[in-house]
Length: 263
Image (cartoon, rainbow, N blue to C red; front, side, top):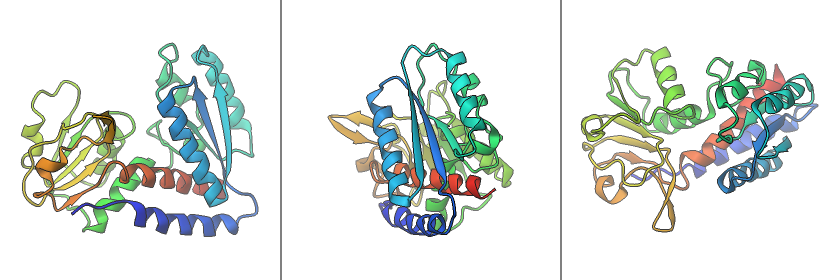
């Protein structure tokens, strides 16, 4: 079954917009964008449009490509101190000259609505989106075999921490050093992939639930990590790309922003 995120997005959109209408001060998200990467610009525009739809405030701090980590951090500290800003995100990737870990660590935890720090009081939006779509077809069981493909800061690492905190132990992880991904995916009950490489997931068992959070351009089209033609017949659930985890992740970013504004 192909499971698009549109119904989940709409349900959350209505709930958030209702909360925002009842707030004296609309939640405001600040996005720090360094440089002019086309994909990053597109992602930022998506967030701005969603802010407008929800009635939230939106502030873009667009810095030049040549910005150093020290300069970016100085601007983030100003946003930390700005009481009109409730959430702060840094649009990744950053230029190579800027250390992403140092920059992200500069965001005060109470405004780190992306939880890229890993210790902020929010569920990472990507993880919230993944969990919502998985739970729609039945809450995952702690005994489920879960394969996490890709161990980046946006999908793999926060999802792993989330699962461990909830007692899941049967977790297999594929990172950049993993040579045989099929060895992990072939027996998995749940697969979550966020690599950004077309046709990466090809071997699965019948009844598997697959969350495809990867995105890349293949033959001129945006596609996920899953070779859909090969696995669709076996998958009990498969999220599409585009139209899957991405839009729901943006919605949950604003859920966190509302929470931050209410604290």
